[in-house]
Length: 194
Image (cartoon, rainbow, N blue to C red):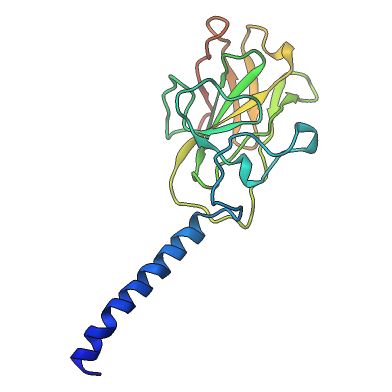
């Protein structure tokens, strides 16, 4: 090929490369639903249907608005909470009665999400927060960010006394009560595994 031919092909080749890159980025960002990623923080199924692993249960960025409702997930920490990289999870009371805020760390595109409801263990001493099974086919980014899930608990668990919470297989933590009604409680961080 001559230099003149290469120069003539340079424009179309660059345009083709740019188009291919745009398609690749769009494919990576898409979750398979029309229009790309989800912007809803609420699950697509009711609690009776079990946990939702559909794209609509993906966390949305926190904008400092009201605390999420049970079954909702937001990217980030609860308002006023300080994070830590020394723990896989943390738990705090939401400002709303009988709702826990469960913080997990992991990929922003494949976060560990808590199910919408938790209950007492067989002994009636520990609240069991189960985690949603991850989608095995989802492509995950290599970042490490917090995600907060709101979890409804039995009303007797929110009695103004400390309660032990088991967060899936991440560990257990004792959660202190709120200082007053309508205010989130402090985050209790699960001890890191040795």
